[in-house]
Amino acid sequence: MRPLAHRALAALLAPLLVLLASACGSQGRAAPRPRAAPGREFRHPGALVSGEQLDAVRRHVEHGEQPWLGAFLAMRDSRYGDLGHRPRPYATVACPPDTRPGRGCVEEREDAIAAYTQALLWYVTGERAHAAAAARIMDAWSAKVRRHTEGNAGLQAAWAGATWARAGEVLRAPGSGWPRASVRRFGTMLRGAYRPAVTAEVADFNGNWDLAMTDAALGIAVFLDDHAGFRRALDRFRARVPAYFYLRSDGPLPRTPPGSRVRGAEAIRTYWFGQRVFRDGLAQESCRNFQHAGYALAATAHIAETAWHQGVDLYGPHRERLRAAVEFHARYQNGAPAPAWLCGGKVRRTLGPDLEVLVNHLENRLHLKLPQADRLLRRTRPAGTDDLFVAWETLTQAGNPAG
Image (cartoon, rainbow, N blue to C red; front, side, top):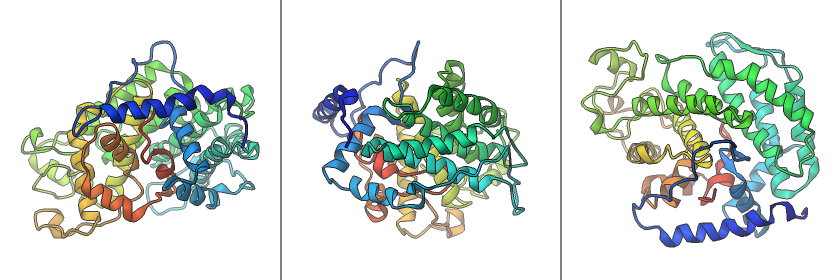
C-alpha cells in the first residue's frame, strides 16, 4: 500500500464525522444539511463519490470487511479490472435507436467503465499501474472522439459521459500521475463531444433518457468547474423527478415534465405504458419493465449524490417520493405478486444493480426504514455493473454516508 500522507487528514476526520452523524440520527430525522452550495470552487473528487467515501472504502477493504471486500474482489476480477484492457476509441460514435448495429457504442461504454474501474483500483490499492491503465484509456478517447450521432446519440453520450466524468474525478486525485495536459484534453472532450448531446431537450422521451442525460451533465459540470451547467442540471432534475415517480399528492394523474406535449388523461396513461391506476412509488416506465425504471432510479440517485457532495440537497424535497419508488420496485422485484391494477397483473422483474446509492442516503443519512430494499440488497450484493453506466456501487456506496 502507498503512503497515505496526502489524505491522512481526511482519513482521520471521516470516521469521526460518520460517528457524529450516527449519534445524532434517529428514525426519520433529516440528515445534516450539506455544505454550502458551490461558490468559487467545487469539491473534487465529487461526481457520485467523494474523497471521504473513497477513503472509507479503502479502509474497509484493507481491514477485510464485508460487503466491501467481496465487492472489491468482484470488481478486481472482472474483465474491467484487467490491466491489459485496450481502448477502442472512435471519432464518431453512431448509435441507432433500433436493432441496427452501431459504431463504437459498446466499445465506448465498456472503455469508460474500464477506466472508472482502474481508477477505483488505483485509489483503493495504491498501485500506480492501475492509474496508468485508467489514464491510457481516457487519453485514447480524448485524443479521438468528436461527436455522437444517430437516434440514440443523447442516451449513449449520457451513459458514457457520466462514467467518464466519475473516472476523471477519481483519477485527478493527488498521486495518480495523470499529466495536467491530459486532464485538460479530457475536459475538452467532455465539453465538446458529450455536453452538447446530454443537454438536448427530450421532454417527451421516456424519462430514463432525461435523467441519464442530467446525470452526465452534472458530473461533467463538476469536472469542468462549470457553475452555470451545474445549475441547469439541478433545475432539470427538479422538473423531471416529480414527473417520473408518482405520489398521491400529485393528484389523480401524474405530472408531466416542462415542455411536454403529452396532454390529457388518455395521453398520460399511454405515456405511462397503459397504466390507469397510480399508486405511490410507481414510475413512468414501471409497466414497460423494471430495467428502464431502474436506470431512472440509478440516474436520479447519481444526480442527488453528486449534488450532495457539492453542497446541494436534492434528496430532501423528494425523500418520500424516492423512498416510495425504491420500496415499490424492490417489493415486486423480490417476487410479490403483481395485483390486477398494476400493469394488468404482469410486471417484468428486470431491476439491475440500481439501488445502493438511494438506500445509502435514505437509510444511513436519513435513518428511514426500507425493508423491501434491504431484503433485495441482501440477496443480490455485491452489485456489479449493468455495462452501461452503473458500476460497483456496493463497493462505493454501501453503508457509506461520509462526504
